[in-house]
Length: 243
Image 1 (cartoon, rainbow, N blue to C red):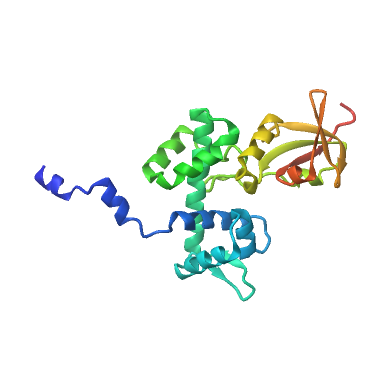
Image 2 (image 1 turned 90 degrees about the horizontal axis):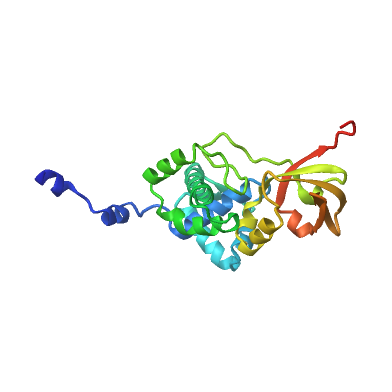
Protein backbone atom coordinates (compact mmCIF):
# COMPACT_ATOMS: atom_id res chain seq x y z
CA UNK A 1 0.00 0.00 0.00
CA UNK A 2 2.85 2.38 0.85
CA UNK A 3 4.36 1.82 -2.60
CA UNK A 4 1.03 2.51 -4.26
CA UNK A 5 0.63 5.75 -2.32
CA UNK A 6 4.21 6.77 -3.12
CA UNK A 7 3.71 6.17 -6.84
CA UNK A 8 0.37 7.97 -6.96
CA UNK A 9 0.34 11.02 -9.22
CA UNK A 10 -2.36 13.59 -8.59
CA UNK A 11 -4.69 14.08 -11.59
CA UNK A 12 -3.78 17.78 -11.76
CA UNK A 13 -0.10 16.89 -11.95
CA UNK A 14 -0.80 14.36 -14.71
CA UNK A 15 -2.64 17.04 -16.65
CA UNK A 16 0.26 19.48 -16.30
CA UNK A 17 2.76 16.79 -17.29
CA UNK A 18 0.81 16.08 -20.48
CA UNK A 19 0.32 19.72 -21.45
CA UNK A 20 3.05 19.82 -24.11
CA UNK A 21 0.56 19.16 -26.92
CA UNK A 22 -1.37 21.80 -28.85
CA UNK A 23 -2.83 24.70 -26.91
CA UNK A 24 -6.59 25.28 -26.88
CA UNK A 25 -6.14 27.93 -29.55
CA UNK A 26 -4.06 25.59 -31.71
CA UNK A 27 -6.69 22.89 -31.33
CA UNK A 28 -9.28 25.31 -32.69
CA UNK A 29 -7.01 26.10 -35.63
CA UNK A 30 -6.42 22.41 -36.37
CA UNK A 31 -10.16 21.81 -36.32
CA UNK A 32 -10.93 24.66 -38.70
CA UNK A 33 -8.10 23.79 -41.10
CA UNK A 34 -9.43 20.22 -41.21
CA UNK A 35 -12.94 21.49 -42.05
CA UNK A 36 -11.63 23.78 -44.79
CA UNK A 37 -9.60 20.95 -46.32
CA UNK A 38 -12.77 18.86 -46.66
CA UNK A 39 -14.04 21.41 -49.18
CA UNK A 40 -11.33 20.41 -51.66
CA UNK A 41 -10.24 24.01 -52.16
CA UNK A 42 -6.98 25.79 -51.28
CA UNK A 43 -6.70 26.66 -47.58
CA UNK A 44 -4.94 29.96 -46.88
CA UNK A 45 -4.54 32.14 -43.80
CA UNK A 46 -7.26 34.54 -44.96
CA UNK A 47 -9.85 31.73 -44.97
CA UNK A 48 -8.92 30.75 -41.41
CA UNK A 49 -9.07 34.41 -40.31
CA UNK A 50 -12.53 34.82 -41.84
CA UNK A 51 -13.85 31.72 -40.09
CA UNK A 52 -12.47 32.84 -36.71
CA UNK A 53 -13.34 36.53 -37.25
CA UNK A 54 -9.73 37.45 -36.44
CA UNK A 55 -7.26 39.87 -37.99
CA UNK A 56 -4.91 38.23 -40.55
CA UNK A 57 -1.71 39.15 -38.62
CA UNK A 58 -3.03 37.33 -35.54
CA UNK A 59 -3.75 34.22 -37.59
CA UNK A 60 -0.41 34.40 -39.42
CA UNK A 61 1.49 34.44 -36.12
CA UNK A 62 -0.47 31.44 -34.81
CA UNK A 63 0.16 29.51 -38.02
CA UNK A 64 3.89 30.21 -37.78
CA UNK A 65 3.93 28.67 -34.30
CA UNK A 66 1.99 25.65 -35.52
CA UNK A 67 4.43 25.22 -38.39
CA UNK A 68 7.32 25.19 -35.90
CA UNK A 69 5.55 22.41 -34.00
CA UNK A 70 5.09 20.45 -37.26
CA UNK A 71 1.28 20.50 -37.05
CA UNK A 72 0.97 22.16 -40.46
CA UNK A 73 3.05 22.89 -43.52
CA UNK A 74 2.73 25.64 -46.13
CA UNK A 75 3.90 25.75 -49.71
CA UNK A 76 5.33 28.70 -51.66
CA UNK A 77 1.81 29.99 -52.36
CA UNK A 78 0.91 29.99 -48.67
CA UNK A 79 -1.52 27.09 -48.98
CA UNK A 80 -1.89 25.18 -45.73
CA UNK A 81 -1.85 21.40 -45.29
CA UNK A 82 -1.91 19.28 -42.17
CA UNK A 83 1.11 17.12 -41.47
CA UNK A 84 0.52 13.47 -40.59
CA UNK A 85 0.76 14.39 -36.91
CA UNK A 86 -1.47 17.42 -37.40
CA UNK A 87 -4.10 15.31 -39.15
CA UNK A 88 -4.08 12.76 -36.33
CA UNK A 89 -4.57 15.53 -33.78
CA UNK A 90 -7.32 17.19 -35.82
CA UNK A 91 -9.25 13.93 -36.21
CA UNK A 92 -8.94 13.23 -32.48
CA UNK A 93 -10.23 16.71 -31.61
CA UNK A 94 -13.12 16.55 -34.07
CA UNK A 95 -14.05 13.03 -33.01
CA UNK A 96 -14.36 14.15 -29.39
CA UNK A 97 -16.29 17.26 -30.37
CA UNK A 98 -18.84 15.40 -32.47
CA UNK A 99 -19.23 12.62 -29.93
CA UNK A 100 -19.97 15.26 -27.30
CA UNK A 101 -22.51 16.92 -29.60
CA UNK A 102 -24.28 13.60 -30.11
CA UNK A 103 -24.14 12.80 -26.38
CA UNK A 104 -25.54 16.21 -25.43
CA UNK A 105 -28.37 15.87 -27.95
CA UNK A 106 -29.29 12.20 -27.55
CA UNK A 107 -28.53 11.50 -23.89
CA UNK A 108 -28.63 14.85 -22.10
CA UNK A 109 -31.47 16.17 -24.27
CA UNK A 110 -30.13 19.63 -25.08
CA UNK A 111 -31.69 21.46 -28.03
CA UNK A 112 -30.13 20.72 -31.43
CA UNK A 113 -29.10 24.34 -31.90
CA UNK A 114 -27.09 24.51 -28.65
CA UNK A 115 -24.99 21.34 -28.64
CA UNK A 116 -22.14 22.72 -30.76
CA UNK A 117 -21.52 25.64 -28.42
CA UNK A 118 -21.66 23.41 -25.35
CA UNK A 119 -19.35 20.82 -26.93
CA UNK A 120 -16.77 23.56 -27.60
CA UNK A 121 -16.70 24.27 -23.86
CA UNK A 122 -16.26 20.59 -22.94
CA UNK A 123 -14.13 19.03 -25.67
CA UNK A 124 -10.72 20.10 -24.31
CA UNK A 125 -11.40 18.32 -21.01
CA UNK A 126 -12.63 15.00 -22.44
CA UNK A 127 -10.36 12.12 -21.44
CA UNK A 128 -9.84 8.95 -23.54
CA UNK A 129 -11.64 6.97 -20.82
CA UNK A 130 -14.72 9.18 -20.98
CA UNK A 131 -14.55 9.23 -24.78
CA UNK A 132 -14.71 5.42 -24.86
CA UNK A 133 -17.64 5.37 -22.44
CA UNK A 134 -19.58 7.95 -24.44
CA UNK A 135 -18.93 5.94 -27.61
CA UNK A 136 -20.43 2.88 -25.92
CA UNK A 137 -23.45 4.84 -24.70
CA UNK A 138 -24.05 6.15 -28.21
CA UNK A 139 -23.81 2.66 -29.73
CA UNK A 140 -20.96 3.73 -32.03
CA UNK A 141 -22.74 6.72 -33.57
CA UNK A 142 -21.38 7.70 -36.99
CA UNK A 143 -22.43 11.35 -37.33
CA UNK A 144 -22.94 14.40 -35.17
CA UNK A 145 -26.48 15.84 -34.85
CA UNK A 146 -25.69 18.19 -37.75
CA UNK A 147 -25.01 15.22 -40.03
CA UNK A 148 -21.22 15.49 -40.25
CA UNK A 149 -19.20 12.25 -39.93
CA UNK A 150 -17.41 11.31 -36.72
CA UNK A 151 -13.74 10.50 -37.47
CA UNK A 152 -13.00 6.88 -36.69
CA UNK A 153 -16.40 5.70 -37.91
CA UNK A 154 -17.09 4.43 -41.42
CA UNK A 155 -19.24 7.46 -42.24
CA UNK A 156 -18.29 9.91 -44.98
CA UNK A 157 -19.61 13.38 -45.81
CA UNK A 158 -23.16 12.86 -47.05
CA UNK A 159 -25.11 14.99 -49.48
CA UNK A 160 -24.08 15.53 -53.08
CA UNK A 161 -26.02 18.75 -53.69
CA UNK A 162 -25.94 22.09 -51.94
CA UNK A 163 -29.45 23.44 -51.44
CA UNK A 164 -28.75 26.69 -53.31
CA UNK A 165 -27.96 24.54 -56.37
CA UNK A 166 -31.01 22.30 -56.10
CA UNK A 167 -33.39 21.94 -59.04
CA UNK A 168 -37.09 22.84 -59.01
CA UNK A 169 -39.51 19.93 -59.21
CA UNK A 170 -37.38 17.57 -57.12
CA UNK A 171 -37.44 16.19 -53.60
CA UNK A 172 -34.58 17.39 -51.42
CA UNK A 173 -33.48 15.42 -48.36
CA UNK A 174 -31.23 17.30 -45.95
CA UNK A 175 -28.11 15.32 -45.00
CA UNK A 176 -25.86 17.76 -43.18
CA UNK A 177 -25.18 21.36 -42.18
CA UNK A 178 -21.77 22.80 -43.02
CA UNK A 179 -19.42 23.16 -40.05
CA UNK A 180 -18.95 26.89 -40.55
CA UNK A 181 -22.66 27.42 -39.89
CA UNK A 182 -22.35 25.68 -36.53
CA UNK A 183 -20.37 28.65 -35.22
CA UNK A 184 -23.54 30.77 -35.46
CA UNK A 185 -25.94 29.75 -32.72
CA UNK A 186 -28.69 32.12 -33.89
CA UNK A 187 -28.43 30.65 -37.38
CA UNK A 188 -28.81 27.15 -35.96
CA UNK A 189 -31.85 28.29 -33.97
CA UNK A 190 -33.39 29.52 -37.22
CA UNK A 191 -32.75 26.17 -38.92
CA UNK A 192 -34.22 24.34 -35.94
CA UNK A 193 -37.34 26.52 -35.88
CA UNK A 194 -37.88 25.96 -39.61
CA UNK A 195 -37.22 22.21 -39.28
CA UNK A 196 -34.30 22.46 -41.69
CA UNK A 197 -32.63 19.48 -40.05
CA UNK A 198 -30.77 16.40 -41.30
CA UNK A 199 -33.19 13.69 -42.37
CA UNK A 200 -36.07 16.01 -43.22
CA UNK A 201 -37.38 16.03 -46.79
CA UNK A 202 -38.93 18.87 -48.81
CA UNK A 203 -40.42 19.31 -52.26
CA UNK A 204 -38.89 22.18 -54.26
CA UNK A 205 -41.61 23.89 -56.33
CA UNK A 206 -39.35 26.79 -57.32
CA UNK A 207 -35.63 27.55 -57.28
CA UNK A 208 -33.89 30.80 -58.10
CA UNK A 209 -30.16 31.48 -57.67
CA UNK A 210 -30.97 35.14 -57.02
CA UNK A 211 -34.09 34.98 -54.86
CA UNK A 212 -33.80 31.67 -53.06
CA UNK A 213 -35.26 28.20 -52.87
CA UNK A 214 -38.91 27.51 -52.11
CA UNK A 215 -39.43 24.45 -49.93
CA UNK A 216 -42.77 22.70 -49.39
CA UNK A 217 -43.65 20.34 -46.56
CA UNK A 218 -47.07 19.45 -45.14
CA UNK A 219 -48.76 21.93 -47.52
CA UNK A 220 -46.61 24.76 -46.17
CA UNK A 221 -44.22 26.77 -48.34
CA UNK A 222 -41.21 28.74 -47.19
CA UNK A 223 -38.44 30.47 -49.08
CA UNK A 224 -34.84 29.97 -48.02
CA UNK A 225 -32.38 32.67 -49.05
CA UNK A 226 -29.33 31.71 -51.15
CA UNK A 227 -27.09 32.65 -48.20
CA UNK A 228 -28.84 30.17 -45.90
CA UNK A 229 -29.18 27.47 -48.56
CA UNK A 230 -25.42 27.54 -49.19
CA UNK A 231 -24.82 25.91 -45.79
CA UNK A 232 -27.25 23.01 -46.32
CA UNK A 233 -26.22 19.82 -48.14
CA UNK A 234 -28.48 17.01 -49.21
CA UNK A 235 -29.67 14.78 -52.02
CA UNK A 236 -32.13 15.58 -54.81
CA UNK A 237 -34.45 12.93 -56.17
CA UNK A 238 -36.85 13.08 -59.09
CA UNK A 239 -40.52 12.58 -58.32
CA UNK A 240 -41.96 9.33 -59.62
CA UNK A 241 -44.63 10.53 -62.04
CA UNK A 242 -46.24 7.12 -62.03
CA UNK A 243 -46.78 7.12 -58.26
